[in-house]
Image 1 (cartoon, rainbow, N blue to C red):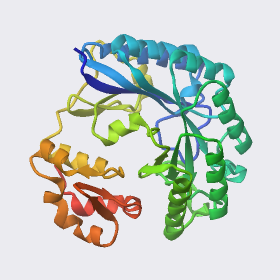
Image 2: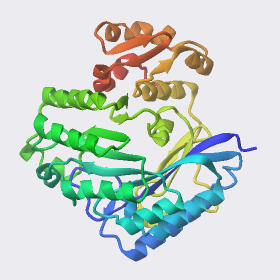
Image 3: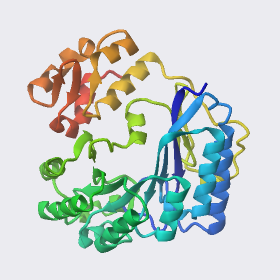
Image 4: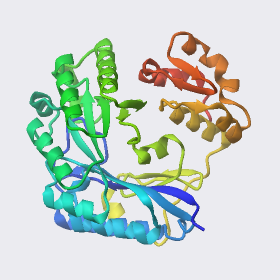
Amino acid sequence: MRNKKVGIYVHIPFCARKCPYCDFCSFEGSSAEEREAYTAALCREIASYREALADYTADTVYFGGGTPSMLAAEQTERVLRAICSAVPLAPDAEITSEVNPATADAEKLRAWRGMGINRLSVGVQSFCDTELAALGRLHTAGQAQDFLSLAGTCGFDNVSLDLMYAIPTETPETLGTTLSRAIETGVKHISAYSLKIEDGTPFAAMRRKLILPDEDAEADLYAQCIDTLAQAGYRHYEISNYALPGYECRHNLRYWRMEEYIGVGVAAYSFFDGKRYGCDRDLAAYLHRDFTKPPISGTPLTPAQREYETVMLALRLREGIEEEAFRRAFGYGFFEKYGRRLAPFLTHGLAARDGTRTYLTDRGLYVSLGVLAEILDDPA
């Protein structure tokens, strides 16, 4: 009987052009032959999990990247068919694809909808053209708005936007414009991420030339996102994520709730059978990999590691940690163990309790790394 649930993440590492701030595993300038070889390798890897997934049903599938819309619709459909052959999809499965407004048209959107993709995550980043140019994006604000209208026409009513703040040339006024236009589109979900300058990226090489907000200004922009989106009915349910009621990203919730998922593709990671494991960024090696067996590797997390990760991930969510659920998992309550360490954060309004649930406030989420560093011990 298939009574276990699993999520499937599919990494598509190709981009029309790599953005100068991006540290994700992606490659520009791929050939049609390379994308076809990658599709075939994905299907082999997925098929290798068939036996391991014998007791499972997949209730979420997520195509991420890179730019998943770089694959032809027929290639995406083959990957979905491979997933369905390896593990049944739940009738209400959430099937998401990330998409760049510059790399998908009506034909591809209709094909996606027809094959069962029912949620889009659109990389808009900003609705101000000067900011899009500073970020190296391929689309304009007008093209992004046209694409969102097209997505609705093609049958997508569950759409998420990716936005960025604390980006070069941005002001509270331009962020306000971006948020207002995002809200006006009627999307159900918005992810708003602060720009981080990652080592090894072009932005890192030109860090001194970038005009970026200081820490206080960045915190104000974060608060502006929360306030503006809350007024429009979007619930701030995770550090960087906001949703209308019932439209939280079910796939990403798997990560934060320590639920099982399989990641396939180059640089994809999994949490399955109690283990975390993944593939490196070597695309050439991946294309020729022998997938006669699923690439499950490593040792199960120790109880200390599982507790550490549970706390670290759960406190990203506004729902926080429920005392009795934690006790059932670890033999003692969360507040029972961590209450003394949390006391200063409760006093200063960075953490709060609601009955038996402990969570970080909006202010606490913004400095969550510092809070977690103070309350958690190294599990090693």
